[in-house]
Length: 228
Image 1: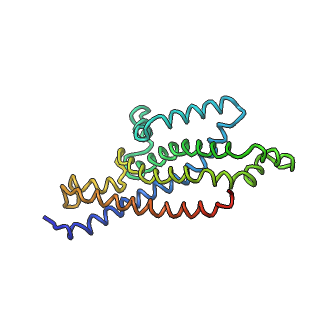
Image 2 (image 1 turned 60 degrees about the horizontal axis):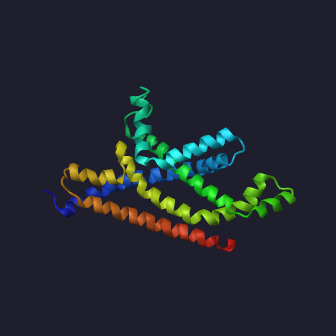
Image 3 (image 1 turned 90 degrees about the vertical axis):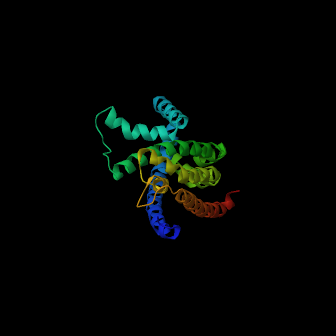
């Protein structure tokens, strides 16, 4: 049987590959969920009642059901129910399904954070902007946006850190992220079986990643201190 020192480079290489998949899912989710969340937020504040009602109902459903269930439905529903397996059965298809599920889920959470940030800005700033002849979009982007970012950064930071850990849920549809890679050595992978210590190593990856994100987001928050 291989010794720990012989197994270590094999495990680290596998975990590195899995973590790259984790990071890829994390960044794709952020890139998609942040703008989509803002669009949904504006939709819930729309004067068109059907749009507002449908979006609020959609947010309620997404926030009220587990992300794991949403992953399973998005990945398996087209093939099992509609008989149209749009995702295919390869790794790229599983990644695409995971990305769609994560973007939709986090966009709904982000939309509520955006909404809270918008309504926290004093109404007087809207009135002042209108007096100056500014349009609604100008008032939002030139007056309210940076103030809103300052107010929503703490809850948004919390959601971003949670997202890093939530990417592990994608293994439910066999996406080979870092937890999948670590767990594989328990079942037998690359000549190693019955080894649980690779799972403990995965925690180090998460700790380092979240530590760096905490420093980055903390620095960004300090730069916005002048909006006190």
